[in-house]
Image 1 (spheres, rainbow, N blue to C red):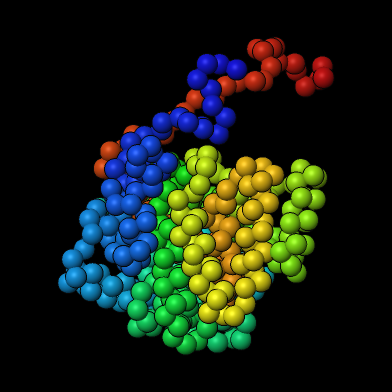
Image 2 (cartoon, rainbow, N blue to C red; image 1 turned 120 degrees about the vertical axis):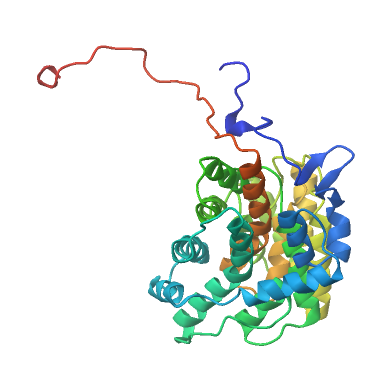
Length: 372
């Protein structure tokens, strides 16, 4: 193995960014200098999206105008609705978003540099519309109206999902989760978007690349797997025993540990508190108690802390979100970060072209077909 080789590019600096810091000593997780704790406590997701994509926090009038712009972009073109109707009912929702994103890029192609802001906001506004149009069509045959006036991306999604305006606690819980998921530096999906962008490809192709990367269970699918794990146990005691057995079998427990954070993921306590609030309001503490016991067991047995995905699972479940939609909610959030990185990559572009360590045969002579 050559010096400097790093499997998975772990620890390799592959570029510069002014968008976020992740796990930096003395800084923690920040979006353009603002701490994730402050943003989750005081901001709404649309403020954070504006911060990431446009580079600064909006004032009150700008935020009102920005929210209205996103509301106006929620409708879907007829051609896209037709494509969504033709997708199989058994498709994974992530496949629906990947296809919808790619199709929208063909229907509304990006033509000029300023369009990148339109493309970013179009996807930010319409991803929930794509997913729920497809879902309701295949569940009931209804072609729902996606251009709702519900406030915010979180409210729009929950309204389309359940057919009515969400309770404020659930709307805010999802809103905070979108803030937490919005950006995370050069993670796999963001890096994929930047690699595609570096070839001077279009905005929608870069976003489609990112969705395909997030589709994998080692990246975006962890919250779905965490929910399936939590649902296996009827009591906290059963959860503790089950986790110990899984660890003895050397099974991977999803939702714990992180490539960057060696200790606590700073986002985890924030979403954990929302999971607790939702459990209390729902008068259903089981999922939260089971989650707590799994966390305690993982810490004592493996020294691992939960990451954002773990308590997001129970929080989303308590908001009535189907498990298979957990990763799509990640997309609703992360398109803000992906968009910021696509725009940044374009401004300082150099095509990515790393080298590989060759491990194949030494040079050898070709053997004619008749002599083999």
